[in-house]
Length: 355
Image 1 (cartoon, rainbow, N blue to C red):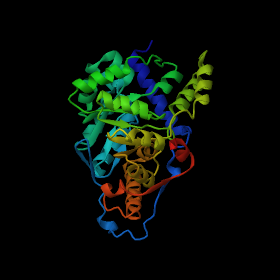
Image 2: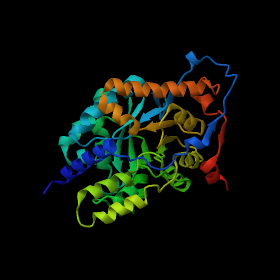
Image 3: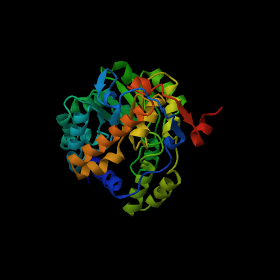
Image 4: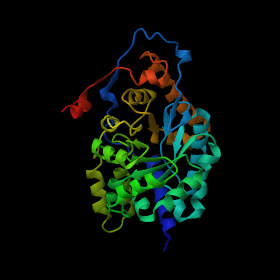
């Protein structure tokens, strides 16, 4: 029998392989329903536009996070090294995948630590599941942060994935209390993030009330963990997994679109990261105009990261170029101005936010 750490590491390899080889995006993030009003007289110099910002006291070269993606398997080490190097070069934030595998099996630590090794001055976000926090306590949270010299810890909420995952934990009781206790005691900022199904205003209110430093929407419209786990169930061939595969297919579009989740969460005044279906610098600009502090991208950077450092850097540079042009065409010399740029909402997003 494999040790728990081995099972977790094997699962991480499945996730990485499926994300690279299968169609795992589903739903509509809502960015197409957001119009940034064009300014025909921008009255600013595009070459002098500043994309810099600060988030939780840390300087960023652009309002972008390389969202939590991978780790926990030797094959992830090379990818995380390149992602870390890109975060350092462009002054971005970067989150690692769930560190459970490395907390269970020290042999996997390097696959996470390599991020900080390659991004000595970037804003690095550690990652632990809400269930693991509840069951293991602040010790595991502290160890996750210490493992990679993180600037903050993300507690991820992934209960749809848990519901579909053959190894999933379906008991969600006590997680808010564990988050509140951690926020009260931890010397580092705590971010709470969804993993593809969005965070509602009601939950955002409870989380900010519990003391979280920021919320990451992790909305519908990007990578679907229901789809990923459905594929794993299909591939396993184990008795009973057909039922889980069918559940994953049924719930593939479950959740709140990223734009709607952002609009919901921003009402409570705390910093919000818009993640889920962000695919271009225009999407990032729309997120900032709607009140996000940062925008996060994961899957669009995975294939370039596998291809090599030059491909990854070129992809990120393109996103930043797109963001800068969008700022220019809205007359926004900096991100403070972009946050006040006029937007018009239509389609599904407009219908969702109407009383």
